[in-house]
Length: 80
Length: 180
Image (cartoon, rainbow over all chains, first blue to last red; front, side, top):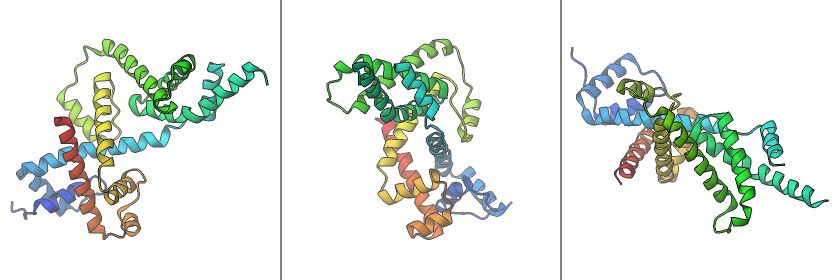
C-alpha cells in the first residue's frame, strides 16, 4: 500500500483534531501510518491523550462540585 | 443577641464563606460527594476547635484548606491499607488513560491522578496568556474551534496550531516537573 507521507507538523495537528472530531478516512490513514513510523509523534499522541483526559476531567469536576443549599445547612447544623 | 446566638451566627458565616471552596477542593481530590461533604464538615469542626491556634500568618481559607488536605491524606492512608494488595494491570491502565470519564479507583491511582492534576495546573499557569485562554475556552467552556477563532481573532488552522503548541509546552513542563 502506498500511503502518502505527511510531515510531523501535520500529524500532530491531526492528533489534536482527532480528540474532538472525526478525521476524514484519508487523513486518519495518513496519520495512523505516520504514527506507526514516527516514534516522536507516537509518544506525543500518548502524552497528549493523557493531558486531554486530565483537562476534561478537571472541567467536569468544576461543573458539578458546588454545594447545594441543603448540604450547606447540614454543615451548619453539625456545628451547632 | 445572646453570646451563643452570636457564636452560631459567626459559625454560619464561616460556612457560607468557605464551605463551597473547601468542597470543590475535596472533590478535586477524592471524587466522592458524600465523603467530601463529611471531610469538609469535619474540617469545620476542627477549625472551630482550634481557632485560637490560628496565627493569621496565612489567610483563614489557606489554613482551613491545609487542615482539609491533612484529613484527605489521613483518609487515603486508611484506605490504602485495605487496597494494599490491589494489582492494576498495564492493560487496564492503558484503557483507563483513553477514557476521559476515567475516575481513579484506589488510593494509588488517586494520588497519581492528583499529582498529575497539580502539575498540570501549575504548567497551565505558566502558558502564555493567549494560549492559556484558548485552552480554557476549548476545554473548560467547550467552545468549538470556529467560536474560539472569532473570539481570539485567529484563523481556524492557527487555532489547532496553538492547541498543539500549548499541549507540547504542557508536556515539556510536566516532564520537567516529574524529572525534578
